[in-house]
Amino acid sequence: MNLLKNNTTLKDYYDRKNNIFSIISFLMSLIIIYYHAYPLYYGINLPKIDPISKVLNYSIAEIVVNVFLIFSGFNIVKSLMNSDSYFKFFLKRVLKIIPDLLISLLLGAFVIAPIVLKVSIFSYLINPSYYFHYIFDNLILIRPTVYSISIVFSNLPYPNVLNGSIWTIKHIFSFYFILAFFKKIKLLNKRKNILIFTLMLLVINILSETGIINPYLNFISKKLYFIGIFGEFKWFIKLFYFFMTGVCLDLYQDKVKINIQVISISFLLLIISNFFNLMNYTFLFFLPYLIIIIASSKNFFKIKQIDISYQIYVYAFLIQQFIIYLLPNINFSLYIILSILVTILLSFMTYYLVDKPLSILKRKCNL
Image 1: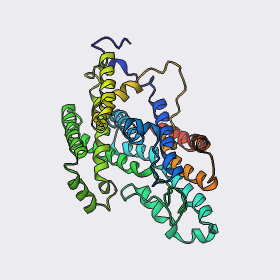
Image 2 (image 1 turned 90 degrees about the horizontal axis):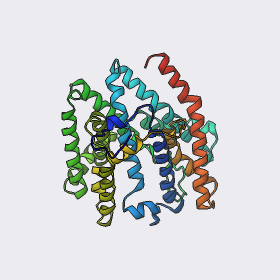
Image 3 (image 1 turned 60 degrees about the vertical axis):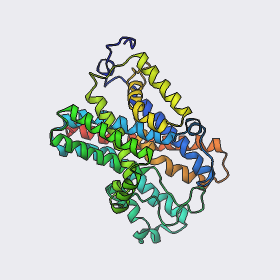
Image 4 (image 1 turned 90 degrees about the vertical axis):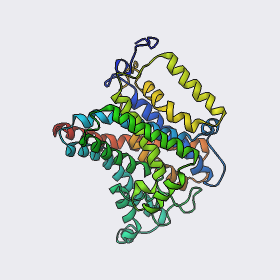
């Protein structure tokens, strides 16, 4: 496909069966490990920032999370529209999200926590106050995220946090409900309405970046803190915007123009904005377009794509903390390498032992 042609659209360019979405997602998940390595190794209060974020004047982890949200929005629309029922749609989402999350929570609660706390497994099990809220509140996806168990990892450089990555999952699941509601009220049938709604979210996020409406967003968070997504309302609005940009890009595939000039100008404007500390604004405009175009590229190497990015996401922080606990004097570079290897190994094990059998089951049940 010649991207120099002005009439090339995303619909012409994108092939649902031949793209590199899984490869990009995998690389993004490794970047999260890299990003977290700095505060987990050097400490939460030390001004040690990863080099990429320092150059960009913008958190690389935030970019990665936004990319995941864009991908999620882009890939979910067809599934929702093609579902026979809302029950089947949500059952597929539950089978995609909950098993790996549950394994991560159980691993932290019943393997790592007893080791760190140095208590007998029996005395630990008969005392649910240790682990109940960590498992239950995080699993139901409507409560505020519980990051740790009792005093687990209290002496680490990044103290008292067992798994700091899982907070976004409740937001993603809430977006599925909202999108299903949009379908129910026929809003998805008119893509112009979805575009207008997304532009409204863009305006709200721009106002948030300026600080103008943050007191109101913080007010909502304080009043509704007991509902997980509203307790992080500013983040909810930002994540929802990037999710909806993915939805819009899928709905408007026949209208989104792709050519090398547009791509080059978008990258150039991002680079220029970095010199003026405006990346927090320009990413709102250009990241969704650029990342979808990149991810839609053909997989010319014909690499078999096994998407374990979600598994890496839910396990990595937990593994990284445990490695620091076991090897407090480990070399930093070795720490990153070991974290990546152990997390990938655990992710592949989960994929083949849990996720792949569930995928076969979903096909047999016509989900």
